[in-house]
Length: 117
Image (cartoon, rainbow, N blue to C red; front, side):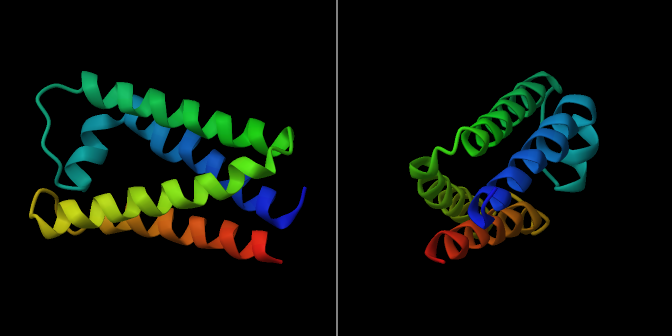
């Protein structure tokens, strides 16, 4: 596995186990931690499901050596980080969301730099 693949593999594990399983099994804890609003915890469990599925796709892409997909994950992770920062600027979420935004941006940068080598 090359460095870009390793970066995407690690991010895939993060999506599955931290974001995905976190939102599936501890949704209100995570939402409270980030100061996010919720009605019931059903919708956020679906978000966790989707995040874990995306994580599996990342790992499958690495295993299948779908290198063309790697660069698209970089831009989409930057997009996700920018979206979160925009919500913060618009006062829709609290500053703890910067943790998620930072993980996305740092992981995207890791993959991007690895692809350039």
